[in-house]
Image (cartoon, rainbow, N blue to C red):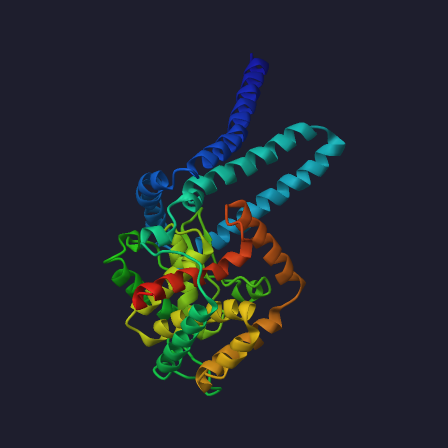
Length: 369
């Protein structure tokens, strides 16, 4: 009798595993179909079911001052490593097939949870359609004019921020103060763009921020906890826009170029000068990078327009990241590139630069050309 019960339990357990594994191809097929219906995703997933889920996650994780996501990530990785070690053990002791099924079940659960907690946001309406910004081919001269405007804004706002003894911008209140004030820009922007509104958990500092710099990663959104996790070791002038970028992911905007643009507009909407400056600098860095790819001579010519303060911040930023460049960052970029492409961002990490298309579209609207 006991033996029969054990067999029945094992059969039932195996059926559950196979069902969980089968959810992956089902979810992939569902994702393939839903890509064709972004309006449906926007209305019934991003702005309803998933929005409620993300805010509920925020309610739970807001109870903790530390990043729950960081702990969850270590736990999930540790479990996977244990499964892999057991796989090699099973090669000698037997039960290899069963262990392979265990690993596939585990990975399937992670993938399906990722998609339903956040991943389908890659299929929502583009931010350009939500905001009625017309993305179109722009001339090199339009790009140059955009860069000039951003340089002028950066030079002006730079005069209003706090400066350290070494001549770079400084956040006197540290990252904690930045996290508290970051919501101001979203609150104002959400008055016209309701998709950016809602109550979410406050941004969280990454405990291993400095080691993360070796990967080149400045922040990360973990769908399993719904937290905006920020690398607080970055230079102060980029901290507000980095925070705003991760908060954009928290609000269901998965594409990197759109998260950058949202960071820009919410930082500009923030009443505090350090946020405005950080947002403009994010836009300037991306726009000048795009110009350098088109016309290096014009790029070098516009660099001469930087104020001393802006130049100090950019030079410090270059020196900062140079210290952390190496094989780890190269591998991290390749992994991130593959991740972005697997989620429909066919340009991979180059999609970060596509923020410029949105900036140019906004610029055309403002100047009516």
